[in-house]
Length: 189
Image (tube, rainbow, N blue to C red; front, side, top):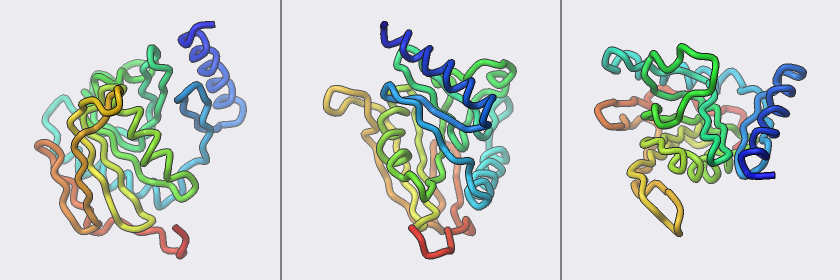
């Protein structure tokens, strides 16, 4: 089988699991990555960011949550917590073309932070997404990654700027104010 055929087989399995078990899954590195549904605080953080972005975006662009973006040739399917895309891109039933996405925001989950910090930091530049913001309620930090170039022979974000909760993060012409975003409060990181 080719890589694309392997990917398509994983995608069919993913779609069946989603229908049968209502499980969320992504595909990367030839693996099906099944996730737990986000906790309420995770969703609250994503919604606050969507509202900020929608208030600033020019007509024709909007922020959305939890929709597939897929690069079949790379064997990658991700479901960003928040992403910015032309409104018309959402008027379909297929996954969003990642080349239409201008910003992805991931809210770190306690159960698998490496997925956001390592794996998606590899996948998103390979998919051509120009800005990737990681928001981490475990410790109140953020990381803006941008400027796709090449590192170790593969696409990578060359620009990386850390922030902390309370900062206003510039992303192109947009500003994301992290003041008031909640921290996970149960003492677990």
